[in-house]
Length: 322
Image 1 (cartoon, rainbow, N blue to C red):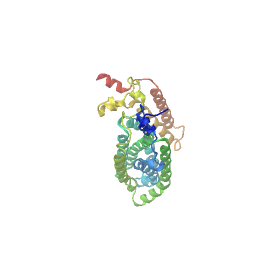
Image 2: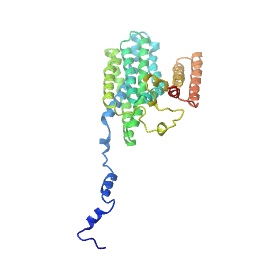
Image 3: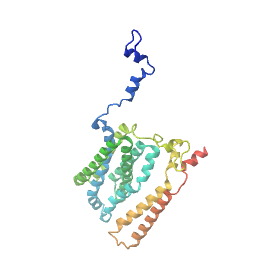
Image 4: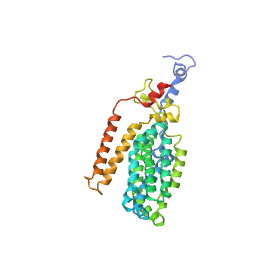
């Protein structure tokens, strides 16, 4: 085919419809260069998340080493096992509650709330004058540990890809291994100075963890209403799930927490764990072991039935009233 006078093939290609958009479309569709695996990892976010994990792991192992010495100081050797049990109970039964808090109020708030509990519990144990104060402080610190265990894993899943999440989970388990190995040594060294240092060492470390979370997690973690769940974005939400951004005030958001399910699970879990803790010391046929075990299992079964019962979210009632 002959070309018009003075026109080349390149000029004719530019005059054809859509030819000018082709380079732009090609550049837009071209894949962006991918960063290397190590460069793609947010090391600041990892530091903000993994430092509290190290703190929680070391705290559990350090105190476990020193609890017999602490009990002997207060002449309460029969109660030495409760120093670890109170922490373990609280860190287990409050896991679902902090998962709800993180979903309703945001990951950053939930993590800071957990660290605050951990800080208060450690401070109470540091200034304890009797064994009940030690047990109360360990229980409060255990509540904070429950939030750390739940929310940190949630944030790792929210903010990373699958490959990065695998790497961070491996780093998480590595820190657990290091904490359980080094913690008893640190606990033995601290208790030779004073048992209060076993708990006091947590105070500056927890404050540093709160600062790291504020700096590197506040604008990175998922907040209420900022998810991609199609059910939450649909015009007719499910009766069991209500968008959390429809609740205006902080107090109103408390209605989104499943308090009935939380009470049943916490109560049942405490009774079962207490029965398992008393069993080796007492006779397994003793009344308090049998009663606690039966009541605990019954409450957990009721919790399962409650959670599987279709019902409207408490926030639906609040929204309808307005």
